[in-house]
Image (cartoon, rainbow, N blue to C red; front, side):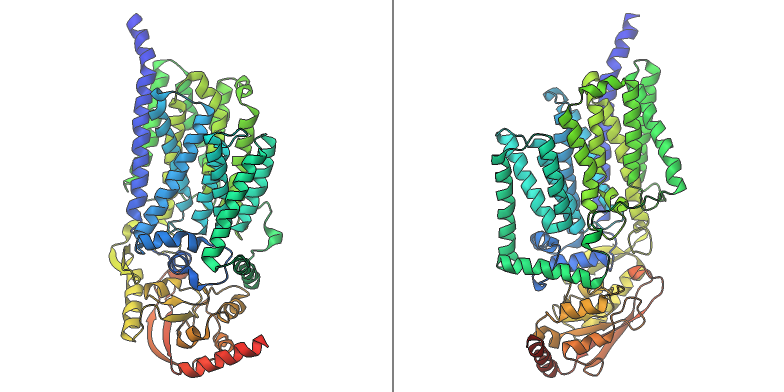
Length: 612
């Protein structure tokens, strides 16, 4: 009888060791999965815009977001390798998320060295939920990834920052300043939201210290000043860049207006989404119930569900499941809704009295983190719930506040490890959707089999056959026509920054002269009339006569040239099915300038008349 009792008592530590192993394996599988697929696919619109902006940001003098300047050094260090650039972005995001998760967990339930492995493993497992930002498979560094990384840094700072002065507190305040600066460089609307949220949180939490606040403010302003000097050579020049960027956004008419920044959007959920929430929630609840009970059969239940969760992650990451979840655009909310259902149920099992052990400061930072996805989404012209769910890790981290009392009571990391396994399985399902339905790509990435070197740097990617043919045909045609790398090119297709990047063109005016918006033509005029006449006169032209997003050729008159009279068509090719998210193939035509001197003189004359 005594032996059986000892066996029951000894089992929980054994279960915890198994959970640690499963969680660590799940983390490795998820990271390896994303790194592997970093070599697969490319989007010709948004993602190619990111690449064009990062590769040569200094040729543009108007921009609201400065992510191109921030990631440009990384681009240069990695020799412009697209796959490696994506991998670096993935690893940077994971590392920052791991630091945030570990700092938050330690603040809730600090432990000695004997539990360090469990703590690090659980926090790493939870950190993989940051990969949800890559759920549509746009892993190339962008303003979205920089915005997200900025919030991860700032959030870690808020955990560490204190009113008193010590090393940890100073580090926290400095992280807040760095996070705020990066948020401004990525997306000023998010920086505004972060500033407002920070002031409210710091005031309510009584962490405000005049000296520490001055340190953080001075640090952020110093970083901003250095950025202005490095980017534009002066503060007035940098301010002018921002003002022009705001004006360009207004001209485009894409919905990025100050009056629409603060809003609450609708939340339309699919019927499938509503069904799967209770299924996942009940499964996790049973696993947590097993942890609470001492009987052997409940331990087996906990162990079984843990194995099921890990197996789901393993099967997905090892490409054994070829089906998307089909939960729609709001699938990131599943992590939020499911885990909070489980947290509430777990608290009910351990009595609501335990909530009294949560400090006011812990409630406050949890509330702040709940608002972080909204802060992340501020300023987007899309649905805030959809955009905010990309930053669902903050909802997950906030939910841990409710689990703190349970972890302290049971002096065990099993509950947290179960949570990590669940978040890994959910994250893997979201990533699977992106890999099966990559943004503006024609097929699941696993079906890609065509190896091709893309761009002037020759980045090796594995593409679909039709995308590979599109790029190789356009590149060969441009080369045959005498097009040299770094030659200026005016893109009238309105949707082909990827092809310009592939043939090595200098994308003048903007990194993407985007079509399809009410103000696309006027924006193209505004951007290109700020481009030096020397580049305008030397620029080739890409035309897509039947394109849905094509820029009208009347644009060229405002530049001092007449199209097509002053140009010669030298090549043409067909787009790929699915390029730009359009099913039909369209003809694109490449033109070279016939009389550069004439165009140069006309351009200068027009500029002079405008100046007068």
